[in-house]
Structures are given as structure tokens and as C-alpha cells.
Amino acid sequence: MTSSSNTPPSPAPIPPEPHTALIEPSSGTGEDLEPESRTGTVVQNIPVGIALMMLAIFMYVSNDVMGKWLVSTYSVGQVLLIRSIAGLILLSPSVWREGWHTILSPPDWKMNLLRTVLTTAEVACFYWSVGYLPLADLVTFYMAAPIFVTALAWPLLGEKIDAPRAFAVLVGFGGVVLAMRPTSASFSLPALVAITGCFLFALIMIITRHLRGTKGLVLVSWQAGGALIFGVLTAPLGWVQPTPRDFILLALLGVVSTIAHISVNRALKVAPASVVMPYQYSQIIWAVLLGYLVFGDWPDNTMLAGSGIIVAAGLFIFFREQTQAAKLRRALA
Image 1 (cartoon, rainbow, N blue to C red):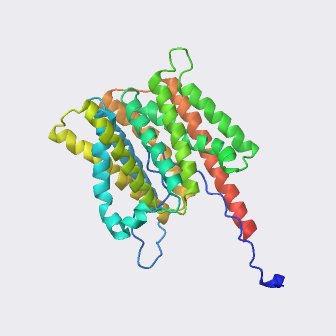
Image 2: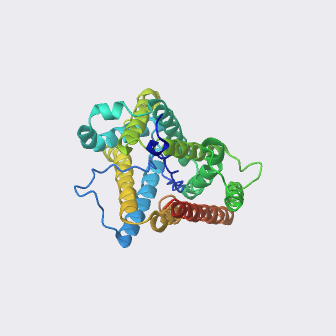
Image 3: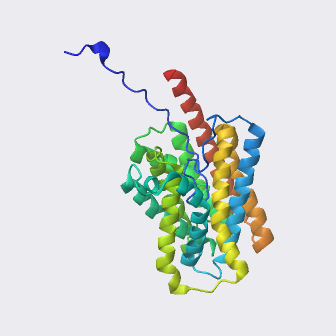
């Protein structure tokens, strides 16, 4: 009989990761696209981390502005086709370095496939609704993604939600309803599509946490491939020949979002998440400013109030989860 002293100890439970979902669709993989440093260490630099996060957020919203401008002329399928081609070209050196076997043979291909399908549907919802909604409205809806993630973490991941976070989720949902301007005429199809996209984005974050052992390059490559297939199938139905300027802008959608995603990951490497992640909510500031300067849109008081409630609830959930994770780490130490 084997001695009990030789029995390997049970692995310690892993502290729950805070829900740090970004607003930009199909980008919050939580994995790095950059090659690892030779030393394996990264010097902590909080000012640089904050600057990188702010730069990434500005790039994301600028990308949304370009997308809103372009979908007024080109179909969602055409936008995703050219966007995904440009993104895959930018990723090609990393794909070459990792090898096609790594990309095509992920640890859990079924969940990767489900994530790819949901990501493609979510991005299509985003680009379709941004053609009809003011940019600030759409960003406000997507700021509720971490609230949806927290609400879904209990039924899908079995994570316990304490009373303060449950209350914050309810408050956040109230902010979403307020932002939608709850009248019979306010629940328009574009608003409902945007909320659907936000809900899909939350599901993607849940699946991404399940796939935390999968390389970020694999996740991003699969989702770019899914968008490419969607574009190939749908773009010919309403093809409009792009002008040289618009073709460059369509390509930049993929390039800018990939660079912004790398900036986010680098920010999280050089500074604590508790410091840099709250800056993601500056998206609403850029969305209001750029929406007004480019499209002449200005959110009304109801939308601004809803935004404030969503931001407050999201920040409370974020810092609450940071505190709970820190307590669990100390208990396991």
C-alpha cells in the first residue's frame, strides 16, 4: 500500500481573476500577442502603464469612429472582410514564429470554435448598430459588459456573488435601462442589437476565462479567421468598390485594433490591473468628444446619467473583485 506521505498534495485553488473586459469587441483576450522577453521579466512602470492604457483606449474609440463612418457606405461583411485581412497580415509574423500547428490545434478546439462564432456575431452586431446609434450611446451599452460578466459568472462558472456585487449588478442594469430611455419608442432595433452585442461580448469573456491556457495569438487568429469567413460569404451581396482612401481606412480597422490590444497587454504587464484598468472607462469621454466633433452627436442628460451609473457599478465590481482576490491570495499564502 502506498504511504499517505507520498500522496501529492491537492493543488491550491486559483484566486478568481477580476472581470477586466474591455469594451472594444473581439479584443479582450487577456493574452499577450508579443514575443516574450529574453529575460522573462518586465520592469514595472506605472506612468508608462497608464499612458499605454490611455493610448489604447483612444485608439479603440478612434477605430469606432472610422467604423461608424465606413458602415454608412459599406456593408458589415465588407468591413469585416478587409479588416480581418489586414489584421491577419499584421499577425502573420507571430503566426509564422509559432507555427501553423499551434494555431490550428488549440487545446480545446470546440470551445475555440464556439468563441469564434460568438465573436463574429458580436462584431457584426457592433458594426451594424454603430451605423445607426450615436457613438456615445453604443459605448455606454458596451461599458455594461463587465456587469453582464459578473451576472453570468454564477450560472456559467459557479462563482459566488456576494451581496454587494449583486446589488451593483442590479444598479448597473438599471443604468442600462435608463440609458436606453425606457419608452415605447426608445427600444429601437439598433439599441436592442447593441445590447445583444454587449451580452455576446460578456459570454466571450466567460469563454475566454475558460480558455486561459490557450495562447492569445491562437484566440485572436481564430476570431480574425471567423470574421474573414463571414466577410467572404456576405461581402459580395452588397459590394461597393472602395475608394483608395476608404480602402486604407478599412485596413486600418484591423491594424489599429491589433496595436491597441498589444498596448493594453503591455500596460497590464508594466503596471497593476487595479491601477490601469479603471482608465478603460475613459472611452465614454472620447466617444462623446469624437462623436460630437465628427458626427455632431451629443448625448442627452438621460444617456449621461445612465453612463454614470454603469461606470460607478462597473468600478465598484472591479475593485470589489480585486479586494476579494487579494484576500484569497493572502489566505493561500
